[in-house]
Image (cartoon, rainbow, N blue to C red):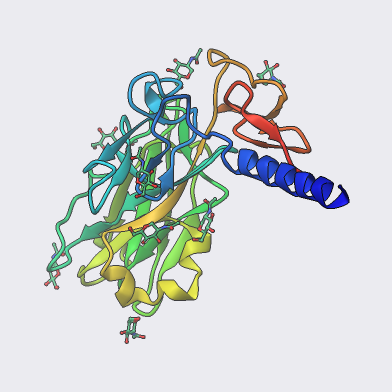
Length: 267
Ligand SMILES: *[C@@H]1O[C@H](CO)[C@@H](O)[C@H](O)[C@H]1NC(C)=O
Ligand SMILES: *[C@@H]1O[C@H](CO)[C@@H](O)[C@H](O)[C@H]1NC(C)=O
Ligand SMILES: *[C@@H]1O[C@H](CO)[C@@H](O)[C@H](O)[C@H]1NC(C)=O
Ligand SMILES: *[C@@H]1O[C@H](CO)[C@@H](O)[C@H](O)[C@H]1NC(C)=O
Ligand SMILES: *[C@@H]1O[C@H](CO)[C@@H](O)[C@H](O)[C@H]1NC(C)=O
Ligand SMILES: *[C@@H]1O[C@H](CO)[C@@H](O)[C@H](O)[C@H]1NC(C)=O
Ligand SMILES: *[C@@H]1O[C@H](CO)[C@@H](O)[C@H](O)[C@H]1NC(C)=O
Ligand SMILES: *[C@@H]1O[C@H](CO)[C@@H](O)[C@H](O)[C@H]1NC(C)=O
């Protein structure tokens, strides 16, 4: 009798654990993953699965191919990770200039204008590499003023500068003779990058960076008042220029953007 009771309790706790680990991240009847990347609502794959078209993700190559690639469709950026609390990691293309085996493409930079996304000021740094290279980003403010940020790198190390807040679109350019900083103008390149990632030992040195075509960048996202408020028992969290972010209340876990998305933790 006692043994049976223990058995029941064990079974019950297993069931609870199973239910929690399967708390859905995507909307009902929607594909939850593209390869090994989870795509949680308000993002989604397929019609009716995302909150609005800015959050539409396309699983390029198909989920069952050898190389499924999740792309945030309207801004055309490849996703590396989606964080439910207002962040995502995406690939940012490196801008090369006058590098023998790399194309110079100064206009190739993702444009987030009009979207609920900004390049994250807190996590992303503008980084430039090249001997005596001065690289700048320039962006037009809402009042038409031009904001500029830049730095000069040396032959042995890159340079970095922080980016304007709420940055959504910008141009990269390299300044040379005009500023008298550099005599010769050989290979240089620049990008926005997740600073934590760049500091990891596994990322390596300048020459290993040169072998890459993209680096991870951090974007912030949010929902505005035209999107539905957080579902109970989710709560409002944060109120930035981008909009609101939801969170599950203490003791609950799951996806606060789905009806009944937050579920009780087992213990
Ligand atoms: C997509 O692929 C992943 C990894 O192979 C798999 O876990 C997942 O179930 C697949 N999803 C769909 C909808 O096919
Ligand atoms: C996802 O898969 C890719 C290779 O397909 C791998 O490089 C990457 O580390 C994986 N990411 C995670 C979080 O497992
Ligand atoms: C980038 O440069 C192009 C061409 O000069 C210009 O039309 C565009 O407004 C610039 N974009 C930004 C965000 O400054
Ligand atoms: C490009 O770099 C080469 C050296 O690699 C240099 O001779 C050339 O002047 C540079 N081009 C420009 C436009 O600066
Ligand atoms: C930045 O990169 C680090 C290391 O790869 C990762 O752990 C972190 O989640 C990223 N930051 C953000 C805000 O996504
Ligand atoms: C840079 O890293 C690569 C790969 O990790 C290594 O082969 C190379 O020797 C390193 N170069 C320098 C200058 O440290
Ligand atoms: C709310 O955000 C969406 C994008 O997510 C945008 O299309 C819409 O115009 C925004 N509405 C308002 C009132 O700002
Ligand atoms: C968020 O900020 C907006 C504009 O500043 C304000 O109207 C709104 O009441 C705030 N919402 C919350 C939940 O604090």
